[in-house]
Image 1 (spheres, rainbow, N blue to C red):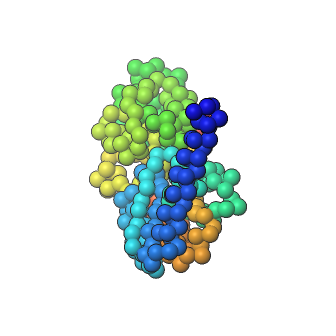
Image 2 (cartoon, rainbow, N blue to C red; image 1 turned 180 degrees about the vertical axis):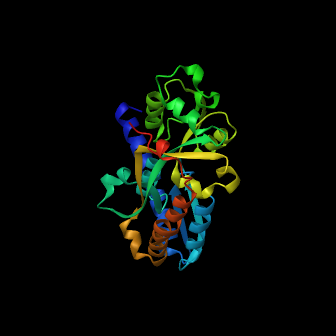
Image 3 (cartoon, rainbow, N blue to C red; image 1 turned 60 degrees about the vertical axis):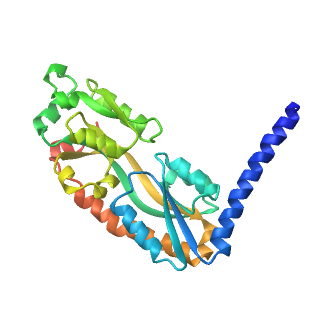
Length: 272
């Protein structure tokens, strides 16, 4: 093919692919008697959250199936909503700024980051590690390593910058794609890590007892539920959107607060 022919071949192939996805979604959403509800969210929202979302979906009129699509990057979920591949997405508010006209958006909660440390590390050791004038030899061995977030995780850059500023002697000895893997490594006393507090309701109590969690200022994100506005005309989608929003704002947010382990005033505010 000529260069022009190659261009139009690729363009038409892409258009036909998008059309096929749109037709399939239309058939499933508007023409079939049963309803498939597809929700995109990060892997942080699993366990208790997944069970609650599934129960809400099952109670929707015409329900036949609930699908949870996980992605470490919320921007991917937004794109899937645009492409009609999923119905709903739980994402950062900032990631849907360009879709305010076509999306229905419900604010769920404000997610904060926490610095997770093995419970065996004393508060005195933590204070010493945060005092960058001290010699590295005085730093507790666990505090000299941390779990680095995968570059695809939006918090990656801010987390690395925090460690460079507050813990310049610590090295990224480990790297993971999920916060669940990060906190497992931390609980094994291999180092410290950053985790969003929205993760806490989905951790078992035995693990939480092995952790100290210190709030980290300046890394907060507003979490929202987004969907295309035209889906609000469907009873099942409107029901799921309304009920999941209420659950997140009330029950789930309260559980987050209950599971954040209190810390001393001297370590609570770690920003300078």
